[in-house]
Length: 299
Image 1: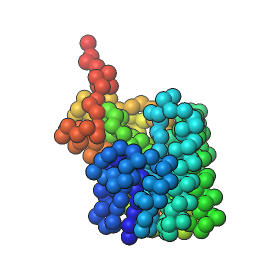
Image 2: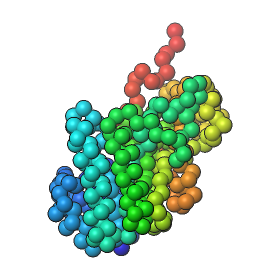
Image 3: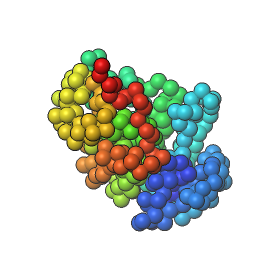
Image 4: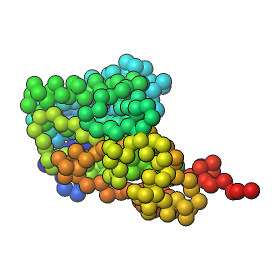
């Protein structure tokens, strides 16, 4: 099987490209020259896309404008790149004979508005999105376009809405791995599982780390997260204490990835312990802890 990965020079696209190389023939397309970009150019370039699709069986589409581009790129650019180019890529893929399409989306489209008053939000695939920026709105529009294409052309389309997956302070990242964060390597594995499964029709999954919590914990997560973390995950409490870090007293949401784990047979492997390992080994994937999040000395 031959797979095209768009956005293959980015952090997530590169991780997907490298993971798929273990089992498939992989080609990458990106605007930025890179060892994982076999085709270099704009995703809106139809001739480039047509050449990249030659002999391809499946497309993984990660190329997009992202949240940091908001305010720097026009809303028209978000529409052209995140929505129109996504639709065109799927249609060109169908014309080229692809058998499936996997779209990398984001849990950011649920946003703070998904947190109810007085308790943490429990976010799953049935939660209505609450888009705030043009980035969020464009990703939702792209999902809708792909759903229509899947139905009209009988093309298997899988949308993977991934949670936080970027370098940030280690204490935040570690806690988020239990609530609303994910390692790029687990994102890559989820994409490979989606390719292997090739579920019929249109499917959407949240991709986030395993959580020790349940939907019955939302009040405690919001009001006494530090106590609940110590109870439900004593290893992270011990690790924080050993490093003189402070557990958060309130957490506002959990992204529930259980449906993806079940239906895609996907098993996320890189939890909070791996964040600490990356920190201790000076990997750029994780940032040092800010001094104001450490325990303050008592008088």
